[in-house]
Image (cartoon, rainbow, N blue to C red; front, side, top):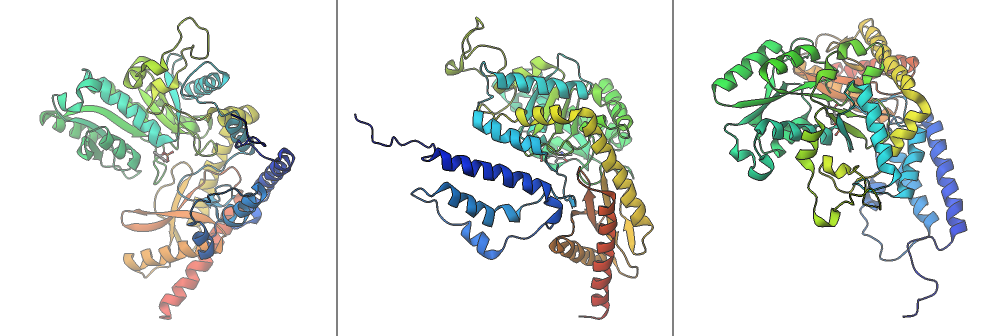
Length: 493
Ligand SMILES: *Cc1c(COP(=O)(O)O)cnc(C)c1O
């Protein structure tokens, strides 16, 4: 059959024009990073933009520059804006320039890290080794880069469950267990762990949420009592999930005490370190994490306090063979060559260590970013955020009309505007209105939480671009908006 001319592929028809566009994209990306402080911390998506983003897929082609113009007009400006120096919502990282470039290169190479004999899995292995060393796990430990801590926790809890069952759970399922398998964590546990426990077939009742102490860390006495009572009842306790940096307030459970308890009770000790595990790099946090290195598994995020662009999480597991036995399943079409030659040779099949077969080259952005900055600089960025949280805490405490609603944990500050004389419901409404207005002014983007019934602003300072004066501005604006809203309440309008 004769080929049509020009031969149709998905490559550019005009390479020179695409090259020009590519240069523009890189220029615009760097400009975006460089000028992020000059733009609002957040802005809502206008109705006409949202409307255009419901259009059906085009049946025919468009000019690449026209597609890019649409991106510039409708998508780029209405971002979550995690790169902004006053973006402090939920718990995000703020990105690095080198990692953004790395993602372009990773997509250019387009390798599949399910396995195979190529350089990319070696890069992932190297990155995993760096992280393993960072958290103090032994060289034999295994690991996997994941989309985030949700998948990392899920992966670790699967290994914990399978190990605890003590029979071939992959063949027989959880119904063959002699009793209901039960995991333990504090009431401050991140919801992804509950989803994992549910997905593992243990039911949400398979996760006991233990009360916390005043500092939001797990109450160990209550934990011991619950485990004992559950054993009495014929349940099978198998795992304690400690949190290194809770999502609400940044609290770090007592790692050594939980490690001791797990040793005594023969339980799997898992750490959800999505937020705080990487803070072992920071001198002013490391002591609080003592004992984390005794865990059986740790889940952590690189797209939070390490600022790698989404998505990048990681799980490390002390018992590499238990990890592999939980996920390896090799059909004929994925058979490997044993003699060390050819594309399917080598033992680095990361698909043996998690649910995903096809895996992106997320290791490259981590590798390039860590190479560029070195681990110590990441540690200094983390340490500074912790100092900034203390600074904001002081500013809140010395401001009339502001109060902290929880002890500051790591880099998370929860506070509210409280002019006095309002009941809880009115205070909650006032602070809700205040936060929305603060976000809509574009000055700063904290998020919210509710602690003991008190709605509050939550400032999670995992941001390497925040300056101390950014917190002065926050305090000033919260007071300005708060006082104005309060006047409105009292004047009845
Ligand atoms: C963010 C977070 C998670 C979930 O991580 P993802 O990366 O969003 O999947 C789990 N646990 C804690 C403590 C978190 O802060």
